[in-house]
Structures are given as structure tokens and as C-alpha cells.
Length: 239
Image (tube, rainbow, N blue to C red):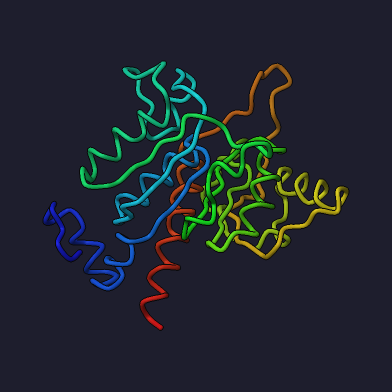
């Protein structure tokens, strides 16, 4: 990367994609909604790849139940604001990164405050139906490229993680619920967009208070989202 103040930390990816791509990575602005089991690894994958301008949005604090699957969650930072814990981790990777944090949640009432038009990429790692549906509608109408994660819980097979256009996602209860909601309300996404998903669904225990999830799957979802951004930017330098 031209003018890199931390010589060496991006050598290996630069060897892979070239200086033009690295310079493009450094100029690109990304906003990521959700820093949980999927979003935290997406954020890490982006910054480790040379993305410098990243806004992360989440309204939760680190809980003990996050430690098994979230990049920034440890036994030492339970109770910390997730986006601040994530920012600290990302700045340890690249101290020159510009990480903007928003401690709050996306909703259909506050979507305008995020200035979606300012970003080259918008990434959805939200796990609640109504907020996710709203973000899909707003982000698919914004000028930037949009990628979304479907449900990553109740899965253990790492070979089942795949990418497809939203309307082609199959076997995902969250994807099906979103499509049903859009059709019922006659509010369809403005354009097509790619999703990360997995058809496997392990039955939830009737006594469980939440869906079980494993970092071996949520991490793959997050890294795949980051990979979609990196590959798309790389392809732009090959035209």
C-alpha cells in the first residue's frame, strides 16, 4: 500500500492482489451493521485485508454468552460496549485504520441518520427480522454495493456455507421469512444483492432460550462477507 505507515502488515495480501487494489482498499468506505458472531469476523477480515475506513454499528455490550463466537469477546471484557471492544481490536491490527463506532441499533425510524449514500459498501449482519428487512430495502436502494448475511445459528457443517442472490437462497428460515414479509407488504428490494447462507438447520432444543451457534460457522459467514467486498474491489482493478 502506497505510503503505508506500518510497513509489512499488508505484504502478503498485497502480493496477492497488487498495489492498485491495496490503494483502492484504503480509499473504500464500508459500513457494517452488527458486530456479533458474523459481523465481528467480517470487520476483522476487512481490516486485516487493508480496508481503512470502516463504520461499525451495534447496540449491545459484550456478554459471557458471546465469548464462544465473537471476535472481540473475551472473559476480560464482558460488559464493554461491543463496538468499542471491536474498535480496540481492529486498531491493534492496524493503528492507522479509521474506525467509526455507532453504539445503537438500526431501525426504520433512524435509518436516515446513518447516511447510507456515503458508503461504497453496506454490509448487513443484523439478526432481527424487522430491522433486517428495513435495512435490505434501504441499502438496496443506496448507490453502494450491498451484501447480507442470512441466519448463521443452528449449524455445524462448514462445507455448507455458500453465496447466492437473495431470491435464490434456499433452506434458510430467515431468508424465507424475509421473502414472505416483502411479498406480503409489497415492498421489494430495489435491486438484486448477494447473501451468505447455509441450508443446514439443526433442530433447536425445546428447553433452549436462544439459538445455539458455533464460531466455526459464524466466522465463515463473516469472512465470506468480507471476502465478497475484497474480491469485488480487486475485480474493479482488473477491468
